Length: 375
Image 1: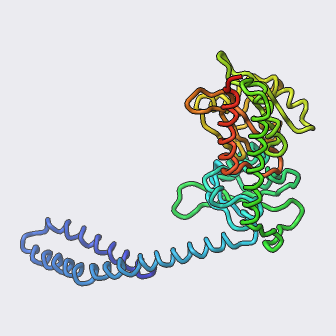
Image 2: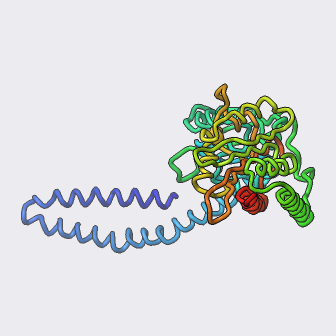
Image 3: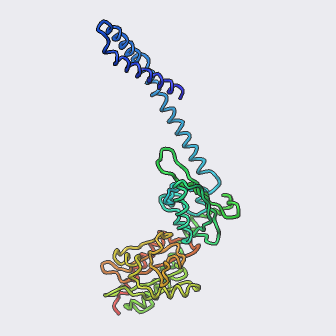
């Protein structure tokens, strides 16, 4: 850095001397040879000293600085990943840019899945607006903040979220560093996190899916075919409890959608009545499934109005504490959509996986065939 400053001073002096030589062009003709000698001397100074000096700086300085910067960045990345405190880096819209190892263990969300998604999607619905507001204030430079939130997978455990502004080098906007800790308790160490057995877990889940498919096939074959409402009711009974906390069935008639079945947890009887009286056409997810004819799995749905609102104006997804949902059109190609099955999981229950969505898509074709079978 000292050599660069010295070169800059020398270059500035040269520029001033060139300006003086330009002004000396108006001297008498007998003095011009002296001015020409001075100009030649300055050109020789540039060629012999300033230019080689510049080449040395350009060949060693920037690469050395870049090498130091790269080493510094690698060190900071390693520190971020290895620090034993759950830390996330988000933008002013709470979209996750980085999630360290401790944060993945603490939230139960893989870093690859979380990156590019809003951090608010992993919080309880009631905490999302406050978290967004505080993150925006921190990004605007209004000071660090701290608030208590709840993770969707552990809604009973309060979590203290501390937000601090951070300006990454070379970036025009301020990011927000989020530190998560259990309120009033110490962050559990990695040794306390139970290590799952991937093979056994996947085998168990696959066996459970096969049992579900078998139960669905048995229910469809043992009942009367051709009655859409009865078929939907039997299918909903198989799915309720063992596969989903809520099952909402809508039949697609000639004129409009009609809600035929709503099965909910035992402690949600009032909410179930609200959902049963709801017009399916007021549920964007149901309408989208009928029009698009494709399964729409949603994990931690960001839009609380995706399934409409109850008579009091409260979003159904918030009232039912929905953490994951499947909206499945019932169709047997070629042919129109016969109806829609919407499945909710709430609270700390595991989100619908891609394997479960695929199994549900297969069962939906069987349900559609049973609905359309001749009596």
